[in-house]
Image (cartoon, rainbow, N blue to C red; front, side, top):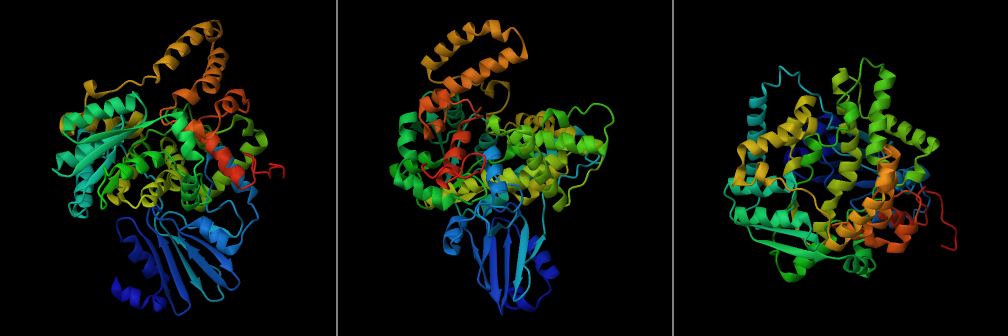
Length: 524
């Protein structure tokens, strides 16, 4: 590899792409020599890269906001802003401001004097499911998954040099997999933490799991009042600027808890944070029912429509008021263009879910979820993402729909292997509502809504709208609704989906934009 680096300006692009494709781990690469510049991201763009032009020069940066400031960019890409308003992220390489492009996951770009940038993908997560018979019987698949999982963690452990590992632990499968696999392999230095409303079911489950595994655990108490103070602080605004990639709302879920851990000295200076992102996505939990239970033979147009409708329903629903026919047509066109540009084509009818997962991977997962590692970097910590390892990706990309439906292979393997003794029926944790007063008041008001609920689908929808407007602000475990005052949420009739809807509104407003991407009145 060093020979390639020293002579890279004279080496054919194809050889470079082949060499980068052989790399493993998390990285971003920038090389410059003799007026030739090469930039590349890893398979998941865990360290993002952006570029824009300044006169005759191309400027590359890992921080989009810093690059936009350097280039003095102000012209908004209205299509990208609308996409963020509807989903929290853009589609393809677009960012909020014209003049910057984001390098995608598993992508390289060559800059040569007087030439247009030469962008090429060396990797794209494009599931190509094996035939049921080729994948082996179900028992064999479970063993293969267990083997690749433990081997992935062994590989990660070999690069930790014995450093302390900190795991954000919840009631879910993914973070529990991380800590139980580490224990199964005998890693000695593990700590866990949980956060949110006092008494929330995620934290109660995490405490039970960590006790069984004999791992230290700490709880960081959240409240709407604390979060509101955090969200209005100068420090949070600085983090927001640092984490803003201009192609997605910054990931803020861990921000307050990580600050508390650092302040209390719970994590050593060289600690490595390892979360469970995104086992649920890879194992099939995001595949919509419409792509699992397809009815009858469908035309290619109908199959494409099913995929696009699934993506719209799953991700482009932050504000109901934005789901107009015109906006949906714009989003569908952008999604289809992006899928086709990345080489996505229909295959066997039972494999349509692969295009759905391909689109979500390159857009939501890469730009929003994986970008959440900026939280750790902001606090000065290192991180790892074992469930985004190359071998783990390759395994799930080859799995048939039958292995991914309801995450059956993932769940069954975990319960059968039972690493750490924290898997099985007695380790399934039902969701409960916190705080207690809100649970009781909610039950009373739901009883009052029973005449509507009994009327059917519309009645149930009426109750859910009421619940979302008047209760979610108080019962959101992470207290992320506190970005907006309670009465603003309660009185709003635009149809928000969750707390991220309000963070998206604040994100766009900071750029002088409405949730539909149009400019705010100057008075605002």
